[in-house]
Image (tube, rainbow, N blue to C red):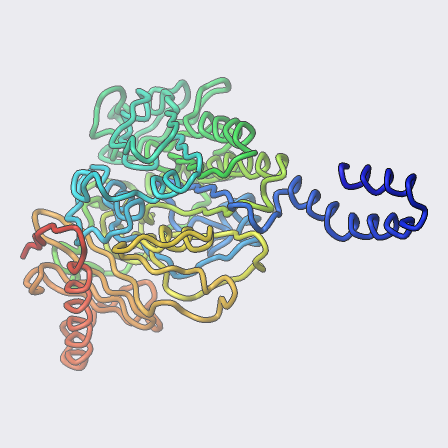
Length: 512
């Protein structure tokens, strides 16, 4: 307006300058108005992209219709997958909540930090290392988390406690307390209850957090994920005019399987199809490879197995509804054009495969995770490159135009958004620990190799994932495959040396 008045006054003084008016308007159309349009739409290339991180708890790819299971309806996650890049071969670094979340949030492998328990990870990396969220906070972003990002137990959720959170990561943080296993509704315990006579475990029973309790809630019951979605939507509206890193920690489908009764109606348990049962399936699996929760030690009847699957699907669909609410708010506020959206899980989940349940195992269904990343301006794609949750930190940092911190051990996936048919790594690496013994997974294009103990003294598993994707035929002890076992052991040893080479000054404490 100042320039316009100057030219207008100049015109009143000198007719010889009248040619400046059309030049001015041309200038305005070419520069001023487009620049204004970019600012109001959030598309200014000089703007920092926002980050919306959505992580579900215990979500397996085998329960998502955007991956390989059309029996479970997840339309909102499916829509995000159709708009972003869906990674088909993404893996967690530890198939248990606490260590997995510590790894992805700090950018170090669990074997580098020796973080194997239910802690935030800060205890081992030290105060000087920035978490993923803290890195964005220190680069001018508003950061907030709602719900479970670092580890929280079931009772933490019920009581609205912070659990093993990392306060340095956030400007603001919110919990979403709900009655969970104590919610009003139809309740049933489908594990360690073979005759249906044992009451559902409630209250402060911590072990109840790892048992498959089902609660079909009545109308009006509070749900933790509903509260989380509502608060995330509120934060998006409040902070839409500043760069933000907002993390939504959804608790479902983690046990107890709590969802409205209406969410169960599409999944009558009688119609659930159980995974195939193979005679003598466990005979060639080392003792440590037998999962900690099975249909056998859980004393589960076939009907209870079907009820557990149905309840998992119902909880997943209910969680998907909350994802839809969050994404709708993002769109309504005009933020979707300048926000990187990530949707993933801390690890996978076994739903009766090999008669195994839950997590901890290094089997495919337990370590593979859904991973969808929508980047503004990038075309939708499906990517088959290996990806690891540890890669999220450097990937999103690079996409945001920030210098990736030195020392973190993930690999940026950023090149894949322009060339999704390429690959940035040729394997995935996961670990687990039980009874004081480490378990390792090296997953390549063709092979899945598990080793228990640093020297393999606890046994080994080797599966041809192209011919035996469900992992029924362990080839590790077959003489014909000795050279392949040797090769995979070499790759594992090289990886262990690599992940122990870090800037943390932590003495590696592997275990035989």
